Structures are given as C-alpha cells and as structure tokens.
Length: 135
Image 1 (cartoon, rainbow, N blue to C red):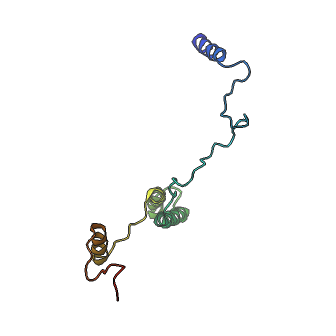
Image 2 (tube, rainbow, N blue to C red):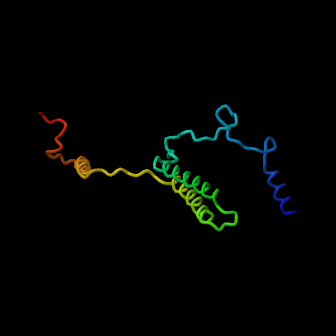
Image 3 (cartoon, rainbow, N blue to C red):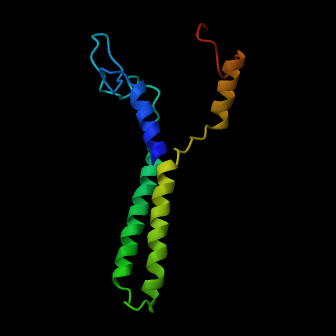
C-alpha cells in the first residue's frame, strides 16, 4: 500500500497545477473533444455484402438452435437436448466468420485479361485498334 501511495503522490506532483488533464487544443485554444477520424477515405468498409449474408445465416442458425432447445427434455435425455448446443455454437461461429469474410473477387474472362495485358504492354492488335485509327 505504501508503495502505491508513493507512486500516486509522485504522479500528482508531475502534473501541472492548473489542470490535471491535458487535452489537445485547437487553433482557438479550446479543448478538442471530438476524437473521430477526420479523413474517412482510408477506412475500409466494416462488413462485406457476402459477410452480411453469412451473418444472416448465422442468426438463423442461432434462432433455430434456441427453438430446438425449447423441445429439449429437462433431464437432457432426448435428441434435441444433445443437438441444440451444437447448433447454437455453430451459429455464433458463423456470425464470427461473417464479420471477417471479405468480398469474393470477380473472375475476369481470359479475353479481357489478354486485352488488358496488351494495353499495359503497349501492344495494339487487330482486335484492339488504336483510338486514332481512320475508319
């Protein structure tokens, strides 16, 4: 206890006498109380559309698990009492997977990939005439 009192008393001495709290201040020397990110262009969307569908399926599994649990025997000797906990836990696990699941990347057709790679390399083929060609 004595050691804690020494540490606390030393930390109080180090603080300024005007205020014990040091908040960041803006240009008018007012304390800044809004600590939200100002630039939101770098933020990643929280949950993908594919993840939202998986979360919805997980919620349905949890609800189904609790419905099955309603039919369970109080002594735990029927099929519902053995199945319900696993369905509920699987539903919660599915919700967790849905939160971190990214969107599926679209597969490009091979012709499109070949056209893009030719444009990047600067090769103009007959199927891809230059934009300044005379028709």
